[in-house]
Length: 447
Image (cartoon, rainbow, N blue to C red; front, top):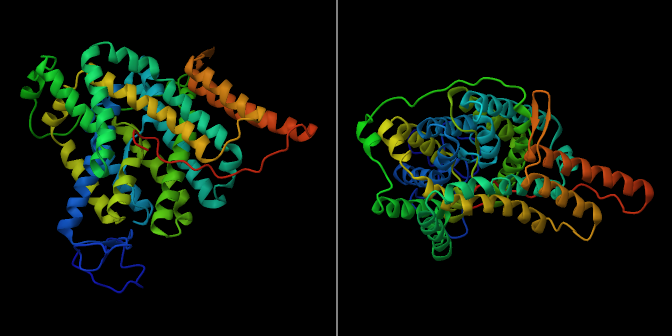
């Protein structure tokens, strides 16, 4: 990939080629580096490493919280990112990290077996890929009609708040360590801006980890015994169809994440990303399926990396190829994976109090940003019933099929909204609303 200095009018320098932006070292005020541009390779490599740092804290938390192998997750995170770039023709800059939306169903399914949880992830990825194919042919209008902002906000919020008991259980394993970790996350968010602010979760974990180390809560024996180089552990999925319904609501969240990501990049770059909306959904679904086949965590686009792009004004997909390759290389060290597994439960408890709460608040933010009118009874009932169902974790079993709070709450949100909307339209008691696009960003700790 030799240096290219083609004119700005050349829109297609080639699939694995990027135009050199300016002098390759700086970005002029008011200018951006587009998806098919790049800076000099040393700078691009540095930017790619920065994207790895931005995604790292959140990505490795998911396997630690769900019991999946961290290095396997990291491997498929890197591979998934490169697959995403291939499918979207290097036009949509994105890193695919671990999805927090899956934590609750994976935790519940893992009580049966990890393989059963992977089966649920695989089916969810397949459904998202199918949605991507449909969007490629028909656009996203039907998504906006099915899941208006009040519905999507309720689904995202209940997924975060449903995890509150898990955060509590981890926190009280070592309350003092959990409290120090939580305070560190809060302070980092308040004190730092730019990249440091985007990785406040990671910084909080580091502070909590050091505190736990000083208290003698960490055992390094597994790290000493692990080898420096080797393939990560792999696991294969199995299918327990009674568990699959727990995973289905996550598809809605993944749709919102990816659509929100593509819209955000389009707004920041000024490029038309609509032709790649369906491809982005399909790519994330395919990456999630691939990860499930090997035993890694499910993937999604990351708000942290969008933040890095916004801060640097560099949207080059070349930097994301570097990030994907770095993630793959890190995954090939069992010693690195053993080190990740030494993070104590108290630290995880402190960080998840903030993390799960933030996921819930993202749903509330969707309501605020889309100006959802809660003076209207249908919006009140849609959100209220869905949240109570999800937070209380209502559970219904039909034979071998189990519907938990997230599934039931999501179903309730969709059914209540559309039922009240239709009745109000027929009776004239409440005018029917026209569907409006849901503005949503990736469901991550700093979205």
